[in-house]
Length: 397
Ligand code: ATP
Ligand code: MG
Image (tube, rainbow, N blue to C red; front, side):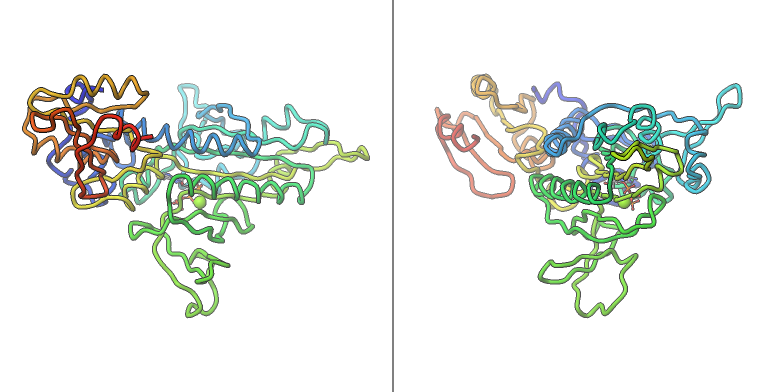
């Protein structure tokens, strides 16, 4: 990608209303744009990052037999009436009426929609277990939409739902998903804790939240130093002296929902003895857009963002000075590297500032001074080396 053509350009000014680091940096560097409070366009580089996050999530969810699909975002009132959540979750729902006064809600989660799907398709214990998921937009009327992309009123979620014949089978799968989530957040490079928490409007049972330690977080968690236990402050009772606490950002949440949804929505299957039983149900969410914002909160300096190799928008930021760099750009692309090539007719200082702001892990410079070598620098280090193209390739692979 030629930087002269990249949409949009980076910005020098910090957005006036931006209180959080992810808001300031992701907007200045050109990853996202705010339409109104809590509502964001993911610009080309932001969308690339979110897609990389999604791909890591997809691989690990597929590995625990999740099957990807896509569900609608406009839901009829009737389905949400069946469980009582049309009233119970009123505060966060965006409800609307059409020209014939028929009522709808924009998706804020999908338990009821999946349950409807299951009761139309599952009859026997032989049809179970099942696990289905999708990546799609959720709409929630969040009161405090001030944390940049950490709290959208419209945001992306990966939500997985599983259905089982017994509680044991549900809990065995729940532990598998907990393992998959641990792999996801480890691959993403986060320092996280798995904290016990309450289920909110979803369940009366305990749930588990994946919490990334960050002072930008709205949650507080307590944990034992040997990591044997972590608990969200909301449900924490006990002697706080035995625990360490810190602010944290919830990036994922898993819910062992039980049979409540199936009983309300009459999702019964026939067991081995021919008896009708309600399915055991679980749901499991991760917010990829919040994950992108969380990464920026925990990985930046005063100059800009510091991406990891796993989710960087480009593998390499190639800076051409004195009209140089075209040949290196072509050679890098020929080696399957995704390159942002700064071909613009602007000064070196401005180009280097943009490298630091955008935060691609590797910066290469080709200029009059570099001869047949290339300057190599990593975003998270000050060391600058002059290397041959082959050595650069070795470092990148
Ligand atoms: P919070 O407590 O932060 O409001 P939640 O517990 O209501 O979040 P869940 O229903 O558990 O959220 O949603 C699953 C995941 O979706 C969360 O772990 C988070 O990653 C993401 N998520 C939830 N709300 C938002 C939001 N407003 N903006 C962006 N991501 C969100
Ligand atoms: Mg939650």
